[in-house]
Image (cartoon, rainbow, N blue to C red; front, side, top):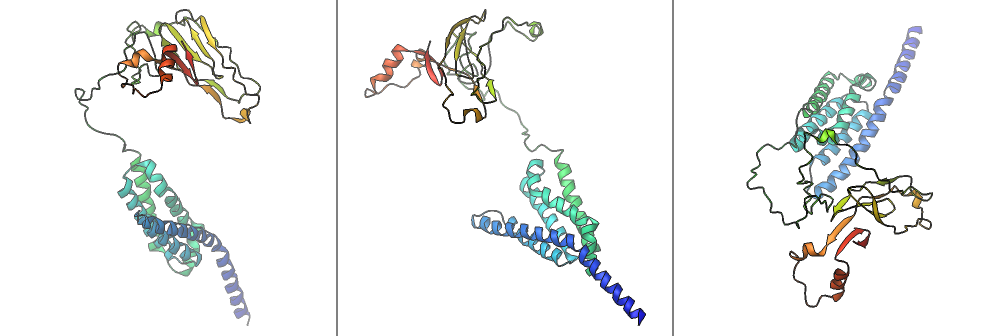
Length: 330
């Protein structure tokens, strides 16, 4: 009688421990099941749009894995091993050893594979039968996915091998001519070549350069300005004048030799009544633009006789302009 009672107590104790141990696999199974259903719905829609079949199949695989985990089946390990292996093969087939494209396709599945191999998730599944094959298969799948990620660190998919024939790669420069010492656009020319033909500064003497002058605009942040006010402009040098702008859209003309201020245009930008102007991200000026009608006259298309006379009138009054939101005659 005592032996029977002891056996019954032991059986009840084992069942309680089993239920407690299965809590983690059950919760993980629920999460994987929800992921699988989401992939399943999205995969069906993607297939309707002639997209990849992978997401539909992955949705089925994840859903089955989730159900197996929730019911405590050791087959969940083997099922997930198959899913991870297939996902690795599909990812390599689709993007190759490209690390940044492999990450969104494999990183989460790889991490879940490692979680399933942890004893707190794997051992409770052994209560319903041996899982050596599933454990081994999942271990191999995790290693293969990890090796694919490691190999992608030593490849450069963006690298292009080959030679460029310089004789056939030339482009005729049709930008208006300018003096060698001018810098009339952000990249010097309208082509943005960022190259100056001046030869006075060379690699041999550049280390001997010293500041010639310093100029301060005096444009400082006000109480209603955003917390970040920046000056990010590239000065333009046009016809013996250096043009800069400030965060409050002031345009200043300087003598390039001495740094002396020649003139200043202040639009009196007001922020007093601006809605939440102080909460804006930043206030800055990224440069001005120069336009000269004469420089583009030769390449401009013939004007239609029906064109309004206002345009030509504006050009005759102001043929050369500096633009910083508002055109400024120079």
